Length: 320
Ligand code: PMV
Image (cartoon, rainbow, N blue to C red):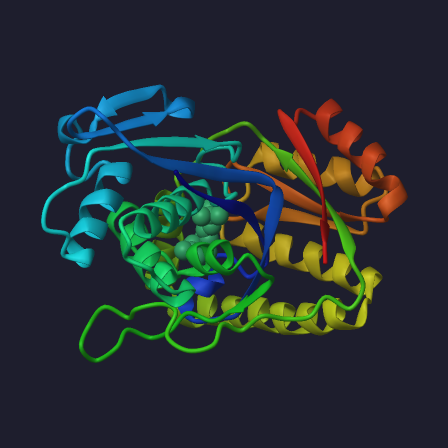
């Protein structure tokens, strides 16, 4: 049996602007994870069990563009395996789906790692990252690559989207990933609106705004870039008051981009009123999760206030 696990993630700063080449900061969230087991099987075929989505089926019954099937088919193609082995694949995940915590990327990374190891086709982290980016592109349109990067390396990432290569593609993961040091650990409370919001739509709407008035939105994205750069230094030097203010500034710009929502705004206000140093949405927006920077001893109180304000779930995580 071969097993693998990949964490969830949150974007701390720079979502959306990252699609336009501005830097963003993201960190893994190890409290939630996707886990995959691959076993040799006595029966013919590849039997897939994905409990969370109630999927119990043989690979051949899935459409080839199904997220799980596309990982397996593409990996077998890449490995040039001569005949399909008989396998049982068990996939479980505690990462909420379509909520900005990177569940799709985590399932792809864990499945690719476990399956490639099981069929004796070892892949480096850079290869896993590039492969996961290609899979993300199949399902999410024009992802920046931040999700697959932070989930693959499971480290804080200062991410700048690579321009497409002249040969096309714009593969991820060539060379060093740009990680950053966390000066002193800090505590984040994550609040889930419980509303699933496709990132593709909010990304598409921001694109329409940008196309209608490029000078305006380039200047907004530049402000986000400054926030991400300053935030990186604040994290490296442990300046939490400043980091909180930067979160609030980033949230105001995300509201201007129209990607916040009444539910997200309500949770953000509740966190600030309960003593958070700063709060903002995280990820594609419109629903999904928000994050709040808190003093460690206030984390529980902020989490309680989030639930009172309508959060369906909260996670307290330490970034180190
Ligand atoms: O919703 P998530 O966590 O997948 O994050 C999307 C982040 C965006 O910047 C909005 C899009 C992207 O591909 O980077």
